[in-house]
Length: 348
Ligand code: DOR
Ligand code: ZN
Image (cartoon, rainbow, N blue to C red; front, side, top):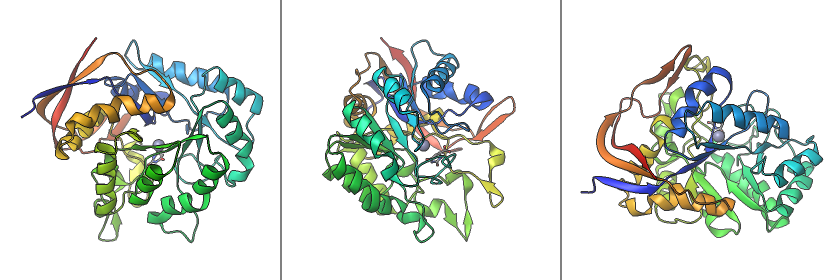
């Protein structure tokens, strides 16, 4: 039985650090194992300008408790961006790409886009600069079932974007369905991030007896067994177009109370690489973990592959219920459950 594995240090291509005290508490959990993280720009004031991105990056890195941790910031796309500033920020690597939030699809997406045609000029710039369009791929409309939002987005919007901007590099974030996996696999210049929770939960873990478990509630919502299996297969074996993106999205425990207020988001960063490792082990694919966690992402983003290593050791750990510090209290994903791996040290 494998007791220890070394992998090139991972990156997390999708994580939420928030602001203020929350940011101070959560950032170190991602910096504990990752060298780089894409810090999503859906802060309460969204990150839409080069200055905001520079300041947000500094704030994150100075709170990471790590000396070589790097935050990469995508621009929150709106139809009223300052185009000169956006282009300047892409050219100077201040923005790592642009994040498309369809309006009202998820947390703080009210400033997002309600008609993608209005930002075709932005797609053109991203394509020209060989940058990346990151997409929250859900169409949020009253007549669309919550479980079908990804499919509708693909059918009604993503096919259009794909065929209008053939060289534009696209990441379909937190792919959540077999349909989404298939789209990524069969189209060019598109990759997908996959979260641990979409490979561990199905809708039965969220919706039970007409109630919702707020701690398993996220966007896109987790789906059927068949979707979960397809995501596991994509992460573990279709190992070029898919890479690590936890979508770790902390909310204070007070914002996770059903039925009064329950924001979408699952906080997994305290045990993210350990969860992925357990999943790859269950799938008998430990030898493919490194590609998913540390190689496919930088290749797609055209960035260097990390040079340090992370060691994972077999060791039984129970994930604590909460992450608690000062006035912050967040429920941990997979709380009270056993995991078999522990990231132990970084070797140079
Ligand atoms: O569940 C989610 N929470 N999905 C997202 O896309 C955003 C995130 C958040 O920011 O809370
Ligand atoms: Zn997210």
